[in-house]
Image 1 (cartoon, one colour):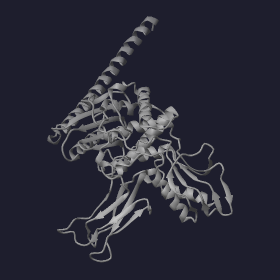
Image 2 (cartoon, rainbow, N blue to C red):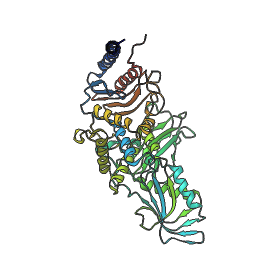
Image 3 (spheres, rainbow, N blue to C red):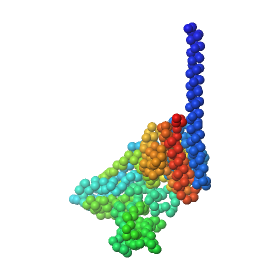
Image 4 (tube, rainbow, N blue to C red):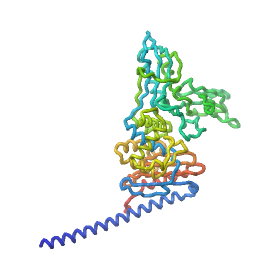
Length: 496
């Protein structure tokens, strides 16, 4: 065969192969297109449910493998995100502080401290840096370190120092009548037990007896006023507990009637002035270990030359982020936001500086115009927050592509049917365990944004935001779950 004939034969063969491949591509695209259309029709049918007729809905779904938008509906409209705000707070914290960042809680003494027998002559300064997970056991650990020195008396005051953050105790745009609830706990760099106390009520020993009420942790910082009695509540005032939040007082009132066969009632309440609460618990824990502090518990500042007497090092930041997202904890979000503000400026941590850091991170990762959205806090309690499904998807997609953000963010999100705020959702569906997302709930707001793997393992990112409905969010949650199930079932190729 001549060279010319061989060249012609090769060209013909190449044309045949190219034609065959082209045909296969067209058939593959047709199949993919048909499945995508089926997905679109399925989502539109879900959104057309009469229970959503008055609501405002926005949806964006993108393939993380190809970058293709699989579905979009009003995706560029602004919505109240509620706790979907925490997705931005989480990415901001991981980006600014790093996954291995740790909060330090220190107990200092004066630079002039001196020992006199079993007495330590000094004031104690409890200094916090916004550790969301710091609890009574951790405080007891500080007390144990002090007791380990062998002193039985400390002569000075016990001073609470939360100056690592500013003194803004609530977020901008928070509802005034949420102040007594645990989900609206005051923000402080010196945080203990999420700045809450648990009240545990149980029936008295006999009919008419006062209800028993105890606190966890036990403390005189929160007073109790019990007029509630044991008995049948029929035609009587039902049992009720409430903190006197309108008066900004740490007094819990228990009123009404509690049935003699009632199980323990456990309610969690925020406290006023969390820094003083933390310092008071420290004094209690020291006393339990045989160490008496003779001075007062008060607010103040740690001297520049103070000496470290005890130290608590928190778990890595990844654990705080996971707690914030899985449990949708608002205080944790605000503490992380202010921590990033402190890191950005080197000055007192504030929401304002934290939000400036957040905007910078969003711009660096996505290029989204900072004037096209608004955040006023880190938790999503604020009604001033506004974001679009497209912007949320852009952030999540950018975090997924970032090697330092992807793994900790994925691990921190609750898995459908398994844990956190999604524990009881999509449990018996294909989305169980494979969909990881953040919920967002306020009155007339229900959102769900995150990741899911399709039936073929294709990673997808989505945001479903539903606002402006009256009554229960059940219909909105049902729509989100049905969309999540569709995405987990999605296939590019038809099954034979």
